[in-house]
Image 1 (cartoon, rainbow, N blue to C red):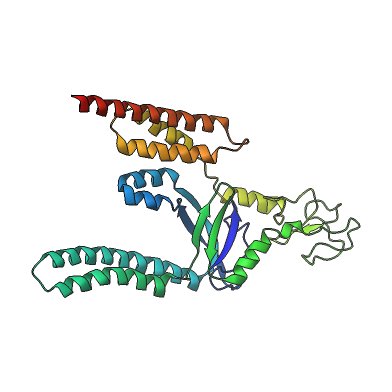
Image 2 (image 1 turned 120 degrees about the vertical axis):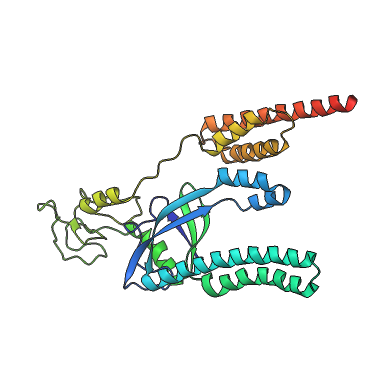
Length: 318
């Protein structure tokens, strides 16, 4: 698998090159909807301590990104088919695991239970190896600035990475003798301003444009003409952040609840959430209010722990 970083808001057909991320083909490429979910992997260690705590922390810290990625129809069908087979294999594994425990607890020969137990492990592993591995993208991390993916095709990864920096190429000379690497004719005029020599070509529709007309998502991005820029704005839905669901707010909320003594699971969740929030917002440019919320959540949790300790000491005395 090959790693790529896609800037936030650019997981779409306007900002990505039309190259299949599975096969590297450029013909017959279509952009298909994708949904990615990610949470820190260290949450898995919490599941070893308490499954409920791990579920609560994961629900708060899970990040989701929606968008589109380029596939050929065959590659897209293979990836979706692999996902379906993998889901069915997991359900089959759960059923076999339950059957294995029942067989091992019954009077039937022990080997039957062991076979069912081994099958519950082997089936999802084989399904992943033969039907899902290398068939599609895999999310590695989701940050506020970008989403990190692992994709199967090396040339596609190279093309996508280079595409995000292609806008840094030197523009055409002021005298208009030649344009950028887009190979437009010399002395081409802007499609909207016929008195201006074009110095860029829209990477989506091929329209010539002057500096007044070009629009970019970032300085490094390739330019879009005004029409394509407007279409991009109407097509790509801006995801609004849900108020009150941030890590800092969740940590403060759990801190308030953790004042109640003897709520051990809440105390652990509050300590984890507020500690992570404090670490994330330790930089000087981070919102001060989020740091204050994390400190307040830890302080409230400390009060709850002290009350719990006092109640246990008091009850032990009597």
